[in-house]
Image 1 (cartoon, rainbow, N blue to C red):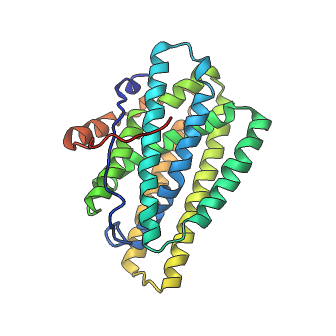
Image 2 (tube, one colour):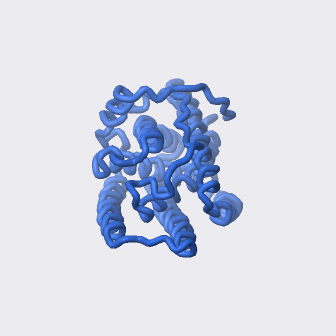
Image 3 (tube, rainbow, N blue to C red):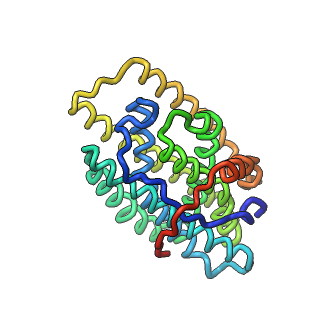
Length: 282
């Protein structure tokens, strides 16, 4: 549990309710909406992470891990709230996000979650969470390295995404350590990985397509450069995630084996992101 010892709950306000360009990712609608789909997925996904970890908290004997779990949960609450703040901005920009949110919640949390719990038990959701936590930490590293700290993105959005990325790196081992403590089954971990890979991929694509269809209806012109820029970043992302999935599938894998803590440390030393204390309910 090396990297999890530094978890800190930061209360932030990036002003995402303010006006942000419709094509905020350097003028590229394709990349903007690909990331916007994460803005829609994350808040309810964070609640799922919290539920899956809290369901096993009583079985944890390690006092230090119990403390870290509370910090993990508090961080996830703030993450969800901050992404949700951007929903109002998306609506002001004229986007219908409720159609996606209704579909996403009805299929994932109203149908899949309870039914898979009946079939596989509560540990399945925890295994899914563990895999998704590895994905988010991997996406975080991708944002810092491949996307060059999101250069060219409006400062409030850039800092918000890098803040979330940094905290994902900070708490990357928590859910894994909880699963390891309650059930160290390799088969369970891989089943969670399959579920996480399929659902995250499917809903990201659905969200992206729904945003782009709205751009088509508005008559938005997408330039060849935008297509090329999106394509090259997308291929790079697929390659990165493929490597991370292969790493995760190794029987002896642990998130602390991925040396990326320096990225989070660098961000928090460079930026003072704690601004206001938000009232959050865990």
